[in-house]
Length: 385
Image (cartoon, rainbow, N blue to C red; front, side):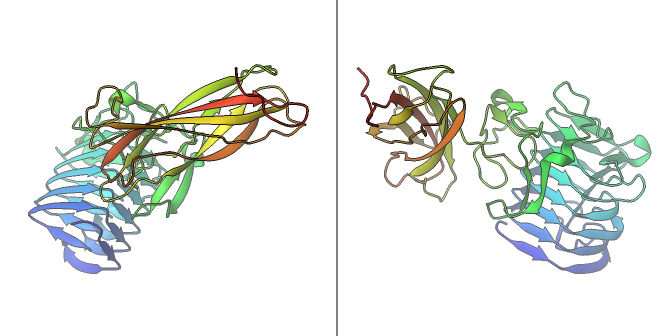
């Protein structure tokens, strides 16, 4: 099941699920569960005894007022990836009540609630197991994102998790526990692109680039190429924790500090794009260019080398037989003012020459080279020799 919306449904029968009751095998992708209510067990979904997989989905404002699992009650194997849980509430497990096995990767739990020690985000029942990797736990009330029945539930960290408290057993060396300022670097649940709402990371968050490329996998060691919205991971030097990957505009420090005229200087930046299935790659992308040169430098030349290959993970242009390469040069000028000195950002929108009609799924590696040239006294541009 994909691209579905379940909203404002209400059920009073025990463990029946406000939106869905599952006893079989169910996969939910790219869907929204909002403001659904169950009297006891699974405001959004009751996975009573089935096998459930949830991906790229959002659960918000769901509740199990007198029971367990504001978003999901789980009585069978449950896998969650690239999903957001926000504003859900229950007596136990504001977002998820686990009575079997749950495995969560690259997901965000924000502002969920359960009273007392009921597990604001997740409650693990006796002998149940919950495993987390690359998951964000922030602002879940009342200060305990995770809890277990008489401390007998099993909490496992596969690393690269972040919690603003200390209740989820995030004790791996790559975990960030008791990250008390994490909430300051989160937005609210909103439309940030993609088919479902997400909670955005804000610049400065320690969740950004926290996972090295070699570890950008889920708890089952499968690659995680995109976030909940379909944005390619990673955008920076590593993958981000949680369901949201912050889009980062690449920067090229074209000229070293103190570089003068007329000697030209240049820098290259690599860009990588992921094209989701069923979509076509855009041919224009903004590239932020930062200069540190002397007054009077222009950006006079942009050379773009693009390499594309359908269905390949970050293709090697020289080795991938399915890849095709194109090269283009265009004269682009973003003139620095006469008063320019020190660091000044210049934003240039360049047309990247991808193959015509490239359809996803595909990965594209692009190398963009910027050359800064000096201006003549008349305001012209000197060509490099």
